[in-house]
Length: 113
Image 1: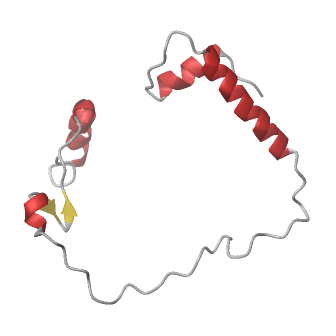
Image 2 (image 1 turned 60 degrees about the vertical axis):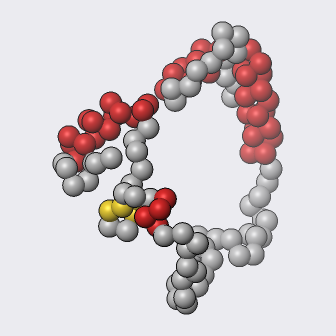
């Protein structure tokens, strides 16, 4: 599989990425990566034992107990806005229009800033 300039520009548009006018270097790099992936896909792994400790079940989790480590400063000093134990942060300017649409669809209690 290989990509061309049209593919790169289309994906960049979908991801809202800005690209320079000349993307030939990027196309070449992506095709190199895809070439490596093609080589890796041909490796026969049917009879290879799985790596120890990795699997669908994941690693066991420890219990979340013990004393909390106290903060050096009061939480209100650096996080004046909180809701339900979570920090509230200002919305990014690039997400203002998206946030208003989300806010309207979710209601006042879920979509705030």
